Structures are given as C-alpha cells and as structure tokens.
Amino acid sequence: MNHTKTIKAIAERSQVEAPTCEQVVKAYEKYGEQNITRTSRKHMAAIVEWISSETTIEPTTCEVVMNELFDLFAEETKKKIPFMK
Image 1 (cartoon, rainbow, N blue to C red):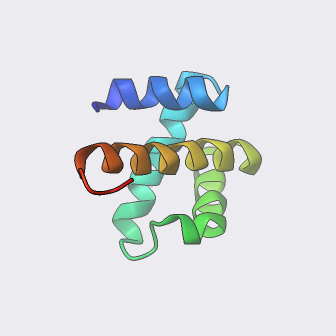
Image 2: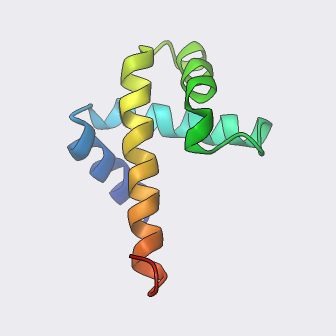
C-alpha cells in the first residue's frame, strides 16, 4: 500500500481529515527515526504525547489516527503472510 492509499484509508477509518492524518503519520515517522526501539503500539502514550507536542494536534485525535495506522499495519501484514489469520 503506498503513502496516498494509506493516508486515505486512515482518514476514512478514523473520520479525521486527510491532511491531519498525514501530519500525524509524518510526525510518527520522525518519532521513529529518533526512537527506533519504541515505535510499537505498547508505547502509544509516549508516541501520542510526542506527536501532539510536535504538531499541536490534540492527543485524542493523534491516538485515533495512530490506532488506525497500527490496525492497518496488522491487516496488511496478515495479507502478506499466508499462515497468519
């Protein structure tokens, strides 16, 4: 799935505008560069706090977008690995 399709899918699923979703995803990419070992869902609070402070987007909106992004990652992974269900 390319970047444009990913942003569109997240926007549809989260009911958040596409430009906001794109800001959150780009901030997450930046976060990942600096915190390579803390990029999973179990670090959601730290991720959301960092993204919110970087983008001035409300933490609740960031969390909704990030949850949808992680869900999308999981779905795409399952599609590519045949024995995962």
